[in-house]
Image 1 (cartoon, rainbow, N blue to C red):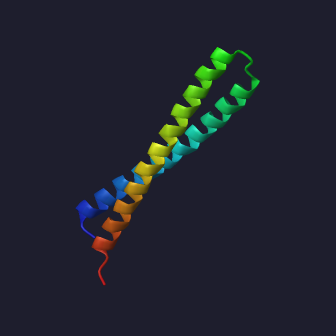
Image 2: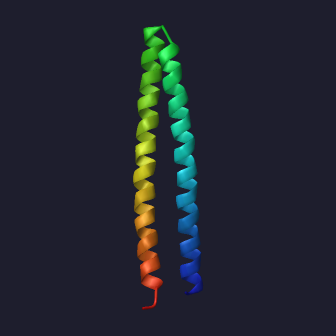
Image 3: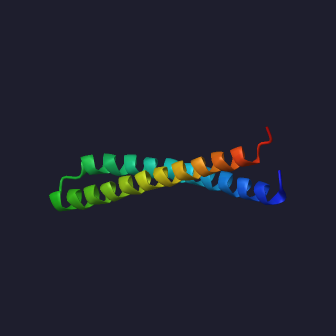
Length: 84
């Protein structure tokens, strides 16, 4: 495997790992926010928190999509450097 391929492979692996950690953290935050929403009685505050929760969930979805694309590129790179 060339030095360039190894560098690219390592960078992609680190990006995937970073995304996974970010997804895990965002899910925990979303869970905590959802629990908080259930405890709030003020409807205005509850609506604002629900909007934030929706935004957080959309961020999670976007990050999952980006991670999926990165993983597919990672596999393509791995397949391109494998000598059969």
